Length: 428
Image (cartoon, rainbow, N blue to C red; front, side, top):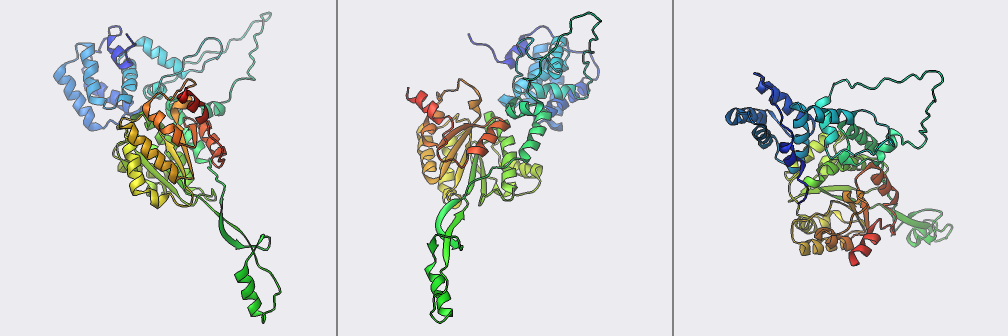
């Protein structure tokens, strides 16, 4: 049998004593605040429902108490892990509290194998331990005659370098804020596309016959100068299709910050930046990204996209885009960024048909997939296998470094990312 998920194992651990506190309602309120700080959408109404539910169900058994609060506070699969972690810490599991405190303390790498924090663990620890002073170990002063131990720190990565390569899903609350500040300074430059239209230039190689003859007529028919033309640069549109389903929620929020920066950047070269979100339906959020304040822009986009953290129907949403929006926004040789993990719940044949049509309409179709953070990623899912042959480039989109790499190659027509390797695995 496979390993049970953490929210199931949480109820099977050692007995947990529920504090005999007459102020249980106040404790539940503080517990809800910690959950909200860790990212769960909990308002006063849910807190009141939880207090009433505990009053009705009682709290003499740990299992009943856990699942009563779970039913009131958790409504998304990705919130279960965070809830389970904060529950163990808040309701006095000393060993789990020590584990979380250790996550907040600096560690010496190389002494023992370090376990990476699960998704949401660091945010859960920060939410509950916010303001708690951490007992850092005192430096040890060695006596004379003892052998001095030197640690070579030349290979240790700086905090900025670590942040660049850190998975968005593994970031703490502070690291997410720092990452957004870094993304606000990034650009996504693009090279212009040469067109058949020309513009006046004395260095041009083409002769502007009409302008030359008009100048000669003003001089009584005497041809004194020859007007010349050079190709007029044409800037492409950028079209971003961002998956906001439950598995892509954290990545989409941060990438939309990056798209807001690109949309408001001056001199980046893009003619227009269009942004769409999709989960179970397609939503155009382009006008919201034009707001100067990023928080207000994303709040407005989130309120309009009603399917945030919902299911995934990529094929149906691409069909809606191809039918309603393709001709409006795909002009000028548009470059399309498709941000999704490719985990389709609909018909893969529809998805294959629609992604092929999108590919034919775009100058470049670049797929950013956060699942590429895994070295052993293979195109086993039906949605990934259906989409992969119809994209020009297949790249990772899980960290700041991956977005920096995208900025370097977005104008390279021969860049395929990891498509060639995965196509070989798909055909094999």
